[in-house]
Length: 230
Image (cartoon, rainbow, N blue to C red):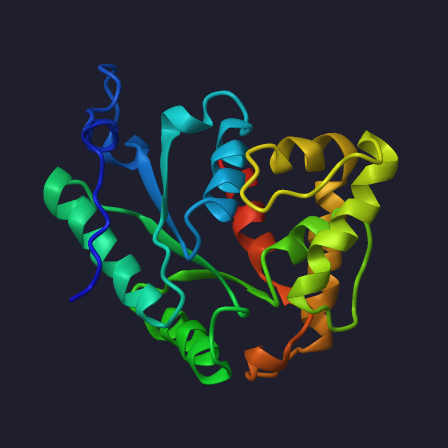
């Protein structure tokens, strides 16, 4: 039986609350994003911080909810769809865009490719912010362009090498840290990270064996989409 992700009463109330009392037509009603993450801390913490950093007024026009599942197989996509249906059933409100966030490091090559293909062929299409090998690649691209394979065990050391000159030699990367978004904002360059990630995708243009695309991350697509919200 699939593990059930409980949706808090507070979150459901926020999700289902009515739009502003001002008169608006249907096109101006609030839009909803649901971001379902493989991890329960690292990715949700990053996107919660990014959400709060969006321009003033965006969170009035858009509801953005982020769920961490702890799943690490292709059942993540099934679970993401189930969470979406649960939100919609319990609130009576549609979700306009579903995104999933996951890494290669917890998947077999076949499951990783299959999960991405499921996102592409779903109707409506599911946004897929995958990373190979791990989500931390997105952090590293805030500092440098990396185009050779990186083992997941090396991410911590590389992050520390980039941040220690800026925050002190005592700095140690904590995987589930709530501070990473702010550290990257203060000491890294998000626009450079987007450019670096886009360059990596060009190395594999036209290829469908995503499990062999190391390093590569599509997190930049979700970040760009959220940053464009107005």
